[in-house]
Figure 1 (cartoon, rainbow, N blue to C red):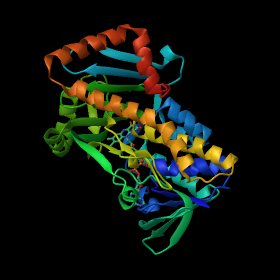
Figure 2 (cartoon, rainbow, N blue to C red):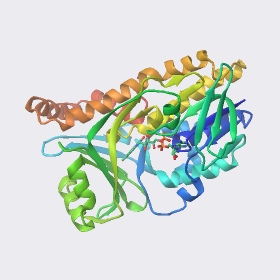
Figure 3 (cartoon, helix red, strand yellow):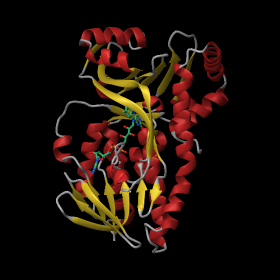
Figure 4 (cartoon, rainbow, N blue to C red):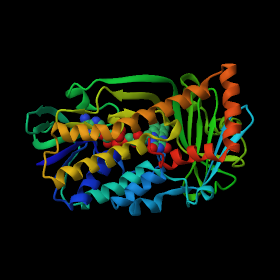
Amino acid sequence: MSIIIAGGGIVGITLALAISHETQGRQLVNLIEASDLDMRFSSDTPGRSIALSEATCTTLSAFKIWSSLEPIATKITNIHISDRGFPGSIIMRATDYNVSSLGHVIELKSALRILLILLKDAPGISIYCPNKISHIERTKDFVRVILDNQRTLCGTLLVAADGTSSNVAKICGIKQYHIQYPQRAVVATISTQLEHKGWAFERFTTDGPLAMLPIKNGYSSVVWCQSISNAEATYRLSDQEFLIQLQKTFGWRLGHLENTGKRKIYPLKLQIVGQNISHRLILIGNAAQTLHPVAGQGFNLGIRDVMSLIDTLKIVWKNKKDKGDSRSLQYYQKLRERDVRTTIAITNGLINIFSTKKALLVIGRTVGMAVIDHTPQLRNIIAQWTLGWLKS
Ligand SMILES: Cc1cc2nc3c(=O)[nH]c(=O)nc-3n(C[C@H](O)[C@H](O)[C@H](O)COP(=O)(O)OP(=O)(O)OC[C@H]3O[C@@H](n4cnc5c(N)ncnc54)[C@H](O)[C@@H]3O)c2cc1C
């Protein structure tokens, strides 16, 4: 019987492609997506970009996805981390770790457009879109979903990859807990006087972190987290005023900030679920956990959900067991527990440490940054985490 995936975002599509690749289409997949995928990615206007760790790229390679994404990806060769208004910075260079890059940046919409082409060609996958699940029935042996067009699909496992507002979680009574950060992220694509040469920047300010990621054609992708009122004001600024304010906060490491594309604004929250498994159900990606973008870990964590689910399914397929029985689900849960907890703790910790104005903590982090920059072993730990190689 099939595996039903609710949600055709980057995590859901990656899972569908991974299953198709691993089983050469023998495992049937029904993918349900609420939006019209062809319409959604038809516009060429660049959207937001995300940073992928090297480990994520390696996983995508294993599923034969990375070779299609690589042409649109930009290598991060160096990372500069600084704390606005305080001395000291941390610099990480790919060459220090004998790797060609510390990660890659992809524009999400272009990536999804490519994934959609792969999806349509992949064996064993049926796509239902634009469709939503209106009813879920979970019996001892199978799960049945009824779509909004009354079509019925049956499977042994339902995977919720339907994002932060997961409808599947709601229908199945999975408790979602969240804290709303008192921040919003303003996102834009900008051009700069100096070439980025693969440099990514993370600048912490007490109002929120500012990230500048290198993307194609010399552009940089800005993710500027600020207090809600400041972010909303920034979002409404004229292009010229926006660039002036951004320059003040970011500085001159990329020379004059020249032009900006359209801005978008995102609310920021930490959301977790009471349990990422339930009878014949697994939640992955943003549906399972939604993080602050400060450390660029949301998708990287989602892809590790996919990897662990594939590892679980490989055992099930090999032993011809039931994909959705409690043993398989618990095996998956055990694989994910520690990684999810650690990544959430680190991400949340970064926000708290860098947004504090408490003197002791400010001194602590300034000294800490200097110590880290001068201690290769500590820098190494951060680099391993950035690369996605640190096993938690
Ligand atoms: C400003 C910002 C910057 C970020 N930067 C990074 C970064 O640098 N690195 C990184 O790793 N992560 C980053 N992230 C996080 C990353 O973007 C997300 O973790 C990732 O996109 C989540 O993918 P997803 O497929 O789980 O969820 P989504 O992208 O939300 O996809 C969910 C899909 O489900 C569909 N859907 C919703 N409801 C239903 C329904 N009822 N039925 C069927 N389908 C449904 C939606 O249409 C959508 O296609 C960032 C996030 C933000 C906001």
